[in-house]
Image 1: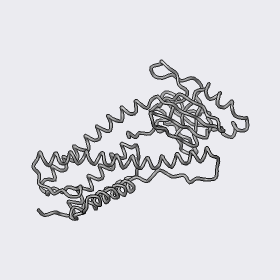
Image 2: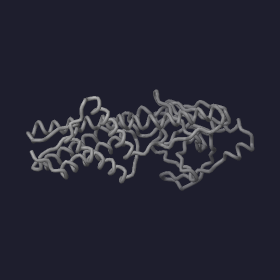
Image 3: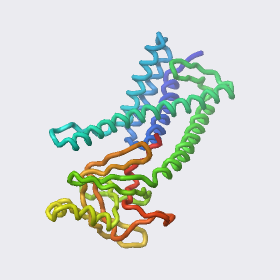
Image 4: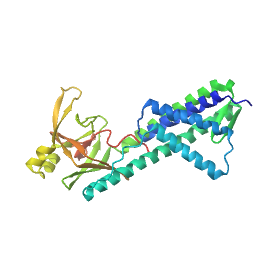
Length: 306
């Protein structure tokens, strides 16, 4: 069987592009198109190991693992790390937690990369088996004869559509589970426990830093601000512009807290600093059965599925 290098590269470039795209979707990570294409190109180039007999098996496994890390790092830049400075113990703990979160984010991407790869690989092998297409498989890469490109294109398209439906369905389930959670606001060394609710309609952002803004009820805000001195309250004060359907644009008063920790299930995320806007009223859940203290921005918990 004759193997054409350009076809081998193109098949695995497109497949790698799809795998990296859905890996990002599953982990709620966005990236630039050029980086995604660079990761896909890396997948296409690595497919030429089809001609290399990598032995023994542990060496082959190690090479594939290194490639996976390289492909994911090429397509998605790691979350920004924060270097430790000589600060208070609490701040150093927050910095350490942030750095650990960065590593976890990259590991989640790597896990998603393999999950999507196995799903796409299974669909591809099913197409080969059911259609009788001749191909060559080696080192985890597949090459199919040129006359079968219509089938290959159809298979890749079907795989992408099915993966999109899967990600959307699972995403809806996960987001519903994340609607109600617990939050902890820290300010001047004092911690305030809050009941939180995630609202997909809250997309407020701080005009200065661009950070997502959560909205706290008036009674809870007065309790927190009451713990500050007038000078401290004035220093932390800020104004958040907003617009809503059926109303004119306006401004909300707010304040900047030291950190906001949100816990959904077994996962806790910490944001430092945190921008909080004050709602001139009280909150109640959509079913009106219970109230809550803070309305989280839709980006706080993120869109990751794993």
